[in-house]
Image 1 (cartoon, rainbow, N blue to C red):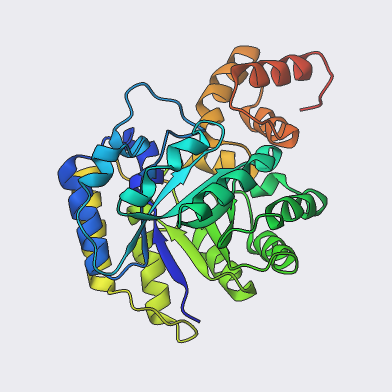
Image 2: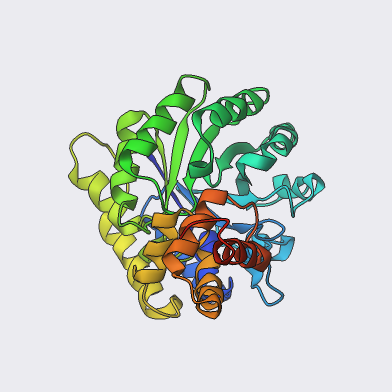
Length: 336
């Protein structure tokens, strides 16, 4: 099997540095990954992130025409952007055929997947390849996943991704979801793995073993919280494992990773208490700091608060969610 390796440093990595990649950073990352023969390079969001609103975000959070026009030419890699329908109108795709971008990645949560087919249709009509990235896949049980597959199947993308947004899945959970979707969708599948439980590589391999063929990763694992599967590690196990074929040049990928480690990352990626707590409790990492502060104010165990938040499967990272959970726990509505 030859998996398709997609690097999303300039998009997901922006959660670490507010998308403040300099023009030199963008040029170096794209040129080095292209020279390394990475298959697809995601260069940012078109129209903004759906999970982190920022008034100071840099150019790769929006991928406006000037940013796209300044991208260096590539010989081997295709270029992609991600759109989040809740923040990016479908008309924002119209100029992409005049840019270097050939792939549009459409990201949605289980509760707003109904808006995705229109974006797939619009991108296809523009001659662009499409992926659908189902975020927070851990919040979709098999009944909900069946509904999602039916909705996506009405306008099937070129690739369907499961995204373990909160880093909470184990290999068994990944296999179950990939296998379930493979039985219902006639398109390649991919995985976007987060590393909160230290399982990004294991989950990626479980997905590949179950039939997925597209693999997301970012240099130095750069992304929010515990980060993603690291591109250099993905390239390493694809190179080392006889079951896989890859054209990726591992030393060149490592060169790109060294650049990011030394010149781009504001701090080393870590997997510590906060990252692990978000993963084990199955909630968005952006809740963690806030829930610890609110839990302390109520005199509650933050791990118990986190468990209740994850169990509630909240749709947005809101302070009200934390306050309501803590209030219910204090009043005896929810046991600790």
